[in-house]
Image 1 (tube, rainbow, N blue to C red):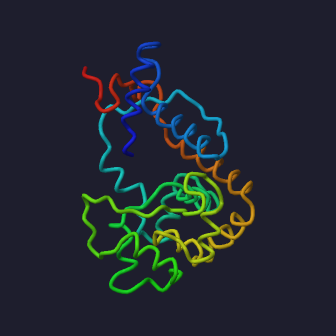
Image 2: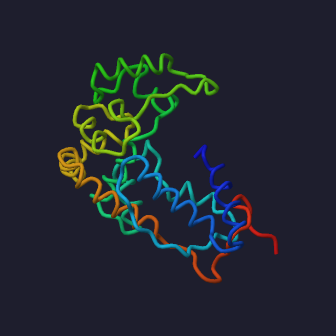
Length: 228
């Protein structure tokens, strides 16, 4: 999310070449597509032609994007409501194979007592990364989601889950929920299967309820709606 500044860089370049043609929604979708490839993930052919909204939908974010502390039941229902099945949802959570989690989102699993679903040695490592129960937000303390291949989108995430090394509550729930655990095992055993399911689910996400035609606009600046 910190890198939304690059959306502006891309948008400025496009406006030089073909003004008012490529939407910010397309830029975000295609940036996700290319970011996946740069991280060693599958190439996903995406459609273009989305329009940008004419107003802000900030409140919708809270209502539609699951939180990492939500129950597996809620996460499944949110994604299933837009047509993504259980194995697709398990694959999407595999995006946690890359990146990092700030300590503020971890410490409740470490203090005052360690979450019993965490591997004890892994918990000690996490305490080293997050040494206090109330981390300084300015210090930006964090732990990587996947220590073995931190910048590769692969099935190491699922292998770690089977060793009780899930970083977030939602990660570890994947192995304890009977509807998702079979897919965790399957993806841990087969990176190709993970990539196939991930590509399918990302494509469904990218085509969820797009604005087209007069429903939307092509913004001149991605941070603001166009002035009339």
